[in-house]
Image (tube, rainbow, N blue to C red):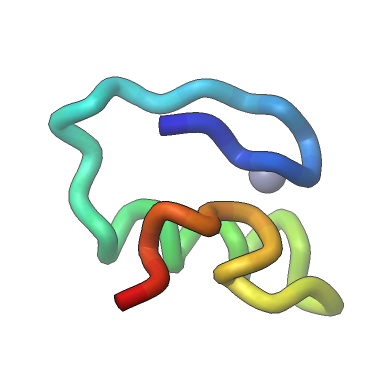
Length: 41
Ligand SMILES: [Zn+2]
């Protein structure tokens, strides 16, 4: 699991909630899916 915007890596056990928190905290101007395309359903 890696944020595509800042290239920060997360453990594979990181939950989707944590990814969303990261995106909202670090990249409020970016869509969460821009950071984590893997979250797309
Ligand atoms: Zn990031």
